[in-house]
Image 1 (tube, rainbow, N blue to C red):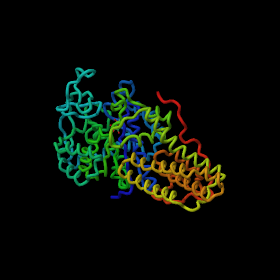
Image 2 (cartoon, rainbow, N blue to C red; image 1 turned 45 degrees about the vertical axis):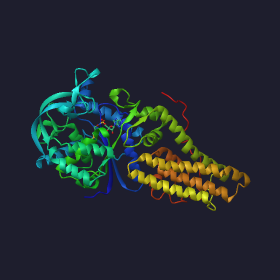
Image 3 (tube, rainbow, N blue to C red; image 1 turned 90 degrees about the vertical axis):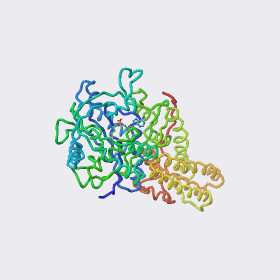
Image 4 (cartoon, rainbow, N blue to C red; image 1 turned 30 degrees about the horizontal axis):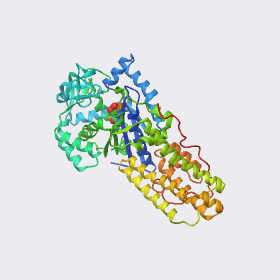
Length: 526
Ligand code: MSP
């Protein structure tokens, strides 16, 4: 088995509706992590996509008077694919579960499960939540209140449940309790963060029941390969996207290259599917299990989990239209701790945009370029003698880059950005303390002035590289303003590991003032 590609996935999103910033969050965080790894020179594969079958989507299409295929085609083309552009996502693949490759791979996987006796036919009688597309145990069903008066609801997420009795195929999940516990024990990093790991270990320790994995009362799904009266239960089919996109059962060479995935990034609502059911299915099919399932927390708006059904769902473009995609990406990565719940607000985005991006970083870039223009005619001067002040900058940059790199390995982009911002703060402090404008007044040709300007520009070079995974548009503008090609080469080719090596900006590079990286935004509310 080859494991040479760093393979990262997002959940595939239900296309019952348009995306909101909760979906955007997962996708952006995966993008930042994969862009960072790519800039280390690793082979990376970043997969996202859409989950198009199941009753939830079917009912939504019915309610809109169109066929489910028409519904999903329209939503994917008009909403879900454009989201990737809006958020500047560099995904390598996009899988739709209505694609032929997914149907072929899913059928191959099911056949393997059947051939290995992991599946049997039975009958199911119990509760099902269409909202969560999930079977709900009797113990987890209560009488609804308020708007849900007269209905039964799931204790797990408050969604309404329906009673159903159907012939179904079952997966022998109960066989995997001990195997999973042993696996978690041997692979402590498999479920992260720790809180989710502990919760799932205690869930599995309480015992696992066999799982109904097919449906026979509607047909919006993929046929069970040996019995076309059944379609695959949507979750069991959806999880397979991670292997079908990698070529399972269809393109073995590609599959060997990509599988197993390195990180499945998911919201904590669906950690159980990914870290209990999914590894059990893979074990049953004799396939390797992914390295990690990382479950992030909720985005809270006004203290509540943001969701479309609560009418507090915010569309990503509402934020991007005002602040731009870079600021969107930066905000979600830096203001929230990946793995915990976190509140966001328009005021907070506005405040951080100005304090951190416009004043902290953007001003630094334009100030340095303006000074090189004014004092050195726009050509990078050769640095003279390095003093303790420069050495402090050089040492801090090296340490901050190493810390940021380690934070990405710990799946903590917020810590990576904290480390990178130490460079922004250090350079701003350095310029204030060294006051090049005073040095220039005394002697515009001095060695000292050249050293200060070259040090500040070199610091900006490092910032452009390490910020490229987070704010690619601004990083590219900064890169160009530093003289970029051919002296510096392409930004995407700059390796994070080598970036802290000092003195890579060639003397004489043409430095131009970048167009305003983060212009001030007047409106504070909306
Ligand atoms: N289709 C399933 C996933 C199948 S994966 C094999 C699904 N889709 S979903 O459209 O409901 O998307 C759920 C994911 O969206 C969550 O796991 C999370 O990544 C993201 N989020 C949705 N609402 C969110 C918040 N309020 N906050 C943070 N993330 C949120 O479940």
